[in-house]
Image (cartoon, rainbow, N blue to C red; front, side):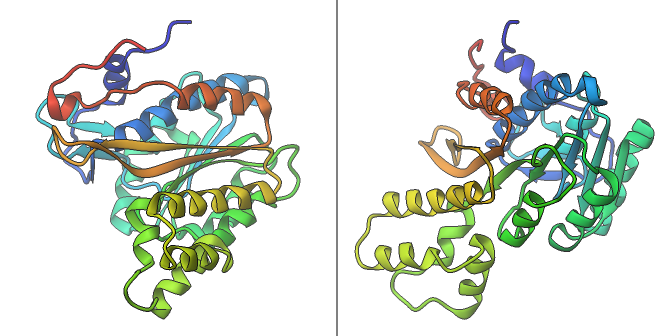
Length: 302
């Protein structure tokens, strides 16, 4: 089957505004949403014999995003939960958790046309996600998106997801790791680390192993090497949870039109299913050029 072109991907992501709340996102968010869209189609296809599989969105948002600085369509794109609900073949169910009351209300309204397949709950990813999965997912194949904007996601939540019982395979995890946007900003080089930042770092990594890297950085370790070590630590801990396949992709884009490309965050995928790993490997290796809404420059056929 021929791969979608960049233009086809953008057309599938795009939507019309409905006058309700939309989350402002940067241009580089489109690559994350494209990756999600492509993988969910493959995931749902593979799960057809067992009902279609279940998608879980731990930090869901209102269901629609507005691309900042967009001057060409699409200015508005579907959020992750709506991408999942519109996936064909159909997923069995989509469970979305959103902490903000207004965002949860709007997402519930946008999800209403999908009937009982859409379950939207207001709640906190760290306290409510696992109980809701145990209630609504059971042992069905499950793909879980964890997409924090900063330091909202605790490692204890990831560990709890990996250890949910009554399953033939672990829940697949698709995690946005905000290394450049948030994590490394916790670690000052010219002053002492404050207690609040220490607590956030320990919650994020699930322990104090990060301190070895931080001390090395203060002793002269270069920034690229320190970032690589933080990233490797996070991935290694996923493997210690029993995930056989863990892979990562940096999301790079200019901060402004015409600027140089730089890494904004990393997508991390964890599964114990070899086929899932092969599919995501192929998707991660695709050369996306999705800048058209901001620059007007069209991408390449991929």
